[in-house]
Length: 167
Image (cartoon, rainbow, N blue to C red; front, side, top):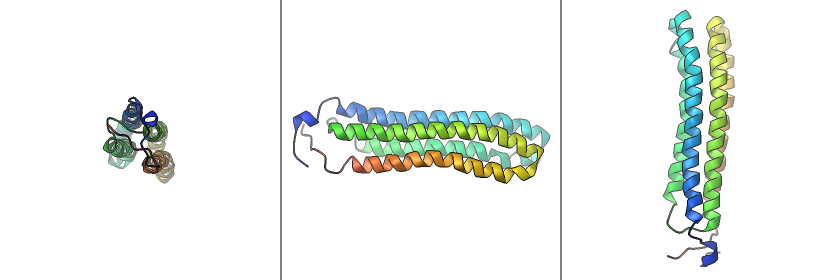
């Protein structure tokens, strides 16, 4: 397209990009903090029963923190394209990308926290359950990764065939 059109470049378009940038990091950090806090209770209480498994059981908290990295990556990509005046389409795509990774990270954090809590307590009682817990944690983590993939695809698409905005 690459043509100038003032109607496609309203002053408020960059607001959507900023909100996408903020949503990606805010929601993934909420998910990561919930996953860490929920699983930490089980990690510490299982450390009383089996202190030798304490470091092994921290996997849940580590996987939860990876979610915040997903949000950070998406936010950095979005902020790199923010300008005072951008096409409305690009602002909407940035908003959608931020919401995509943010809400997927939030859901993954909830899943990791719940699975981590139950899994750590169960594997403390029966160590053979640890492998099953790790597999379920991987499935929960992948939910956040799906959000990042969709986010990057949307951000890549947001720069193709868009209207140029002049100042």
